[in-house]
Amino acid sequence: MDALRKVVLEDEQCLANVRPGKRVVFGVGNLDAAIMFVGEAPGAEEEKLGEPFVGPAGQLLTKMISAMGLSRAEVYIGNIMNWRPQMPVDADGEQYGNRPPNAEEMNYCLPYLQAQIEIVSPKVVVALGSTAAHGLLGADAFKALGDVRGRWHEFAKYPMMVSYHPSYILRNQSNRSKRMIWEDLLQVMERCDLPITEKQQGYFLSV
Ligand code: URA
Image (cartoon, rainbow, N blue to C red; front, side, top):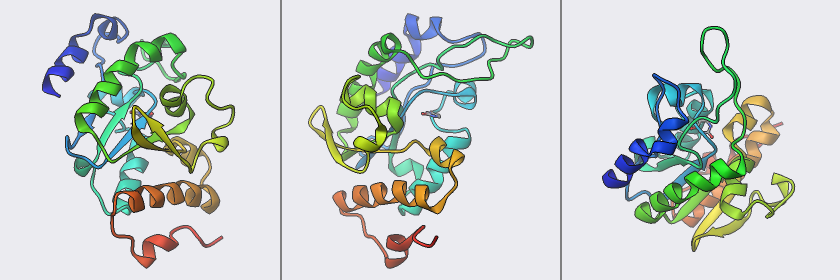
């Protein structure tokens, strides 16, 4: 993994896509992880710190992982993209918005993600949100995320659960949406033979 990380961090195309002072972002976590979470692309915090899922969506992902009885250090976290998809910058030289990566960008970075998945060889891959799911299932695999989420799929022979991106929960704070993502994670826990308490079974059931 160290050798792969070095290749990605020194990749000319990746470097050409990050602005001065920002960083290429490679996956982090346990190389023996049973669960590998896959997101979309670095955002502002991630490209600043060079680590996936450290901004607001990342803090929620960290909470979700701990609700599963795990820590970030016990799972592996990666992204489809190794750089923040670029948009115009403001007068201060900072990019404020985010955009989803295009097909060409995703195709460029996908082999790097696949190599990480093969090294970690997790029991389960969890695709977070529609960009990750499209990247891993194929551009034409589905129209609405609801058609594929909460179900088992395969990526490169690895069982894969598709769920919502934590940023969706940040925008939709209802117990219903929290319960949907939590039910997907319960399926992941079951598949990995993780203990599930009654309390965990019942999270977000109240309306
Ligand atoms: N959203 C993602 O999909 N990935 C990150 O690393 C951060 C936010």
